[in-house]
Length: 602
Ligand code: ADP
Image (tube, rainbow, N blue to C red; front, side):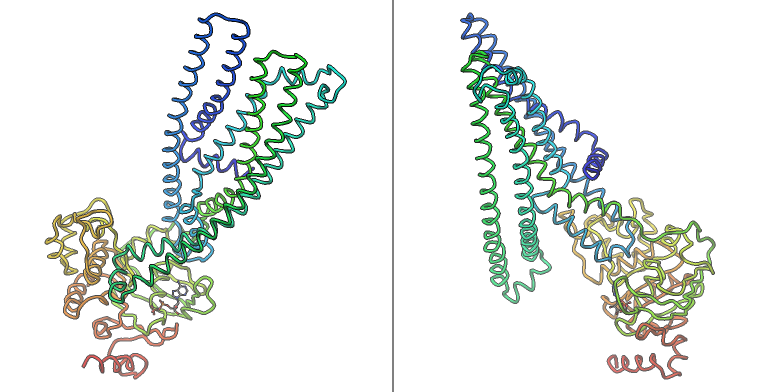
């Protein structure tokens, strides 16, 4: 119950219109069947009383008009609420996205958190989207309750008659009415249990179906994605993938759907038979009372209609209560995501001045859920204005070193100091402002060039072109149809341009330059560039970062020669540190790497 109220509060905070409009819609929908019942009974009364044509015509006109009016109101509310539900899903997703933006990077890598996100996404792809489905269930539940209330009011006189003993037979005693009421209650409980049962098996089948769905989307992605298009065509893999897709989706999917529908059909038939039995009892009760002349013929229509609506209302209410079995796990998943937080704590300190020294003091680090150390006992100080190269074999811990320096993760042991103060004491924004980083796996977005580079809606055009020039991509941008306003990629704009890996890397460099932070970090900044472009960029870049602190990770040792110092990582440890000449002279790891690379380049 707590979770259900929490869901209502959440839905209300996402959109204030949804719940009141659902209530109105349920009211309008529940009243409509009773208008027909009431006016049919009224007409019979008029006919039996030999009423004149005028009163008959007026009654028919009022009944039809009310019916029509309610029909229009109901249709309008139905359409309106459909749109509200679609919007609600968007708002729900927006909220999750805004939480994800704020979530710490460390958390995003956590496997439990990834699993949660996966479930959340799957729920949307499957037929059961979360809150809209809950709103629909609420609507059905309210319809059930309103139907029960209205029917109860209508049959109240009959109940009164039922409790007034008029004869000796079973059918004439209150015990008969009590039996009927009890059977309705028992029916409600059985329907509820059956609904829970159907929904549970539906849910487990749906999990398997969601898995198939996921595979289907994966195949769809393979077919539709032009980045996989080359390989599929060149290796002639169309048939292979196509038959794999159809086998999984059609054969397995059909089997699963058959199983679900057989189960649902059995349970629904059971509920229908039960409903019919109770209906039989109800007709008997009303019939017997009618037989004894306890109410006029017109009331017979009224009571029969109202009683059958009770059965209907009970079915609706119990059925929707059963659906909670599906909704609750999805809601739990949603709340777990949005209540996430609990990530890193940041301090209040702001970084000021223009001199920054970053010190790693005996830092060791293990990735969350990882057994082995990615960095061990690192002692290293990056001095202000220093250009330092970080080299080493793949997996030696270079990128991890950068991630810790930017506080994407916290050290497992030891501490990192900036200007002598623990990195944890600084505010998030001042750390973000300190670094301009180009990671190996940098990302550009399907947005205009200027937004990608300035990382902002507003930009300084002169500065933008200056940075584009420094990273050797100005001419390419000037050659685009809308210059800096041209969209990258075609996802959001048909005229968007596709850029090569090297061009993307140059734009990522321009973005780092535009940020103009005191510390520039480049992780394999020129891996996708040809040798001429690489040389060009290094020359320009060195002059640009001349007065800044710079940390380069590079596999091309020739580009590290110009750095003040070179740190060599090996097997998660800092193996050597010194100038190019010092390291060559010491004949250690660096000199080994240097000689090995020289072989390939000569
Ligand atoms: P480098 O940049 O030198 O190639 P990394 O710093 O990326 O090396 O990786 C160092 C070690 O940490 C490697 O063994 C790698 O497998 C591991 N590692 C990197 N990222 C993660 C991660 N997100 N989770 C677990 N282990 C990781």
